[in-house]
Length: 333
Ligand SMILES: Cc1ncc(COP(=O)(O)O)c(C=O)c1O
Image (cartoon, rainbow, N blue to C red; front, side, top):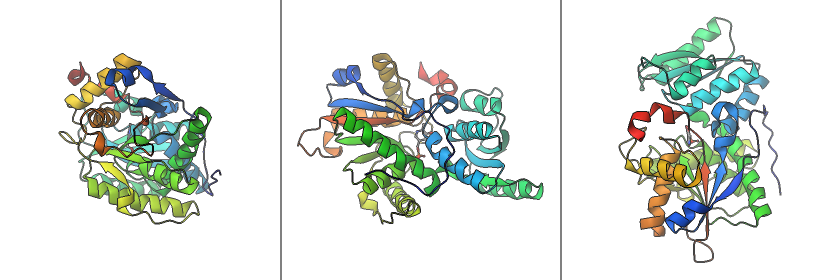
């Protein structure tokens, strides 16, 4: 079975992204065979998971006759950087509302936002949505047609990108005769996990999708992803109600909070770099892979149960974010 969507799509990514084994780090960790899905290789200005969401968000914006993308995030937001790149590629303007103070020297994602021509607006973290709504009204008054993109592009339109990503990975797994016991992914604003969950359900593919929470308590993220997956399925014309309990979330690795680099992330980043030559990022994939390493070493009972009784294959979904490494240089090495 394959999926079709009634949503408009604007091509931005180099898809499908590769799926390949991680032999050296699996041997080092003495773990089940690890695999990696390379959404850090989607191509859009450094890649990452927002590319797939933005294909549908930009498609929707253009279908509505919009000429400006408007969104918000943290100073080192990968979502903002990829939105700026998507706007450039689609010939649209881009306004970004960033939480915090402008640093003296722009680096990492912020540097790229500037290079990509986005207009930046600074406010406090708490005031970001208010500022965004104000800006939307200002742009309309100036005769522009802004398209508002929520945090992380995580609405039913954006999450559709991950419904199709699930189909992509299912086809790759079939070709490799691979049945992952679990798919492990960083989860924050929830659109990636919600799309994957809705996709697995729509395809009838039995995949256990474990979100490692980056910044949300377990119950809150489960409820949020369940609601978003339900809306995403409805938007695709496949209505289904997901319950919070249907969603697998581990929130044991919140560390010092959002964007705070700790030993867990540092070890994950350096190990993956040195064993496989693959760069994780300091905020999302470093935390998610660090959490997976901890689960494998110390708490395998908290991983999804393998149908065969023994975990054999685990697929880690790399969601990108490497440009932020440069902004974290002092804490990394
Ligand atoms: C690199 C990276 N990985 C994972 C995520 C989390 O994805 P989601 O917000 O869809 O849960 C983000 C979100 O910004 C991200 O930038």
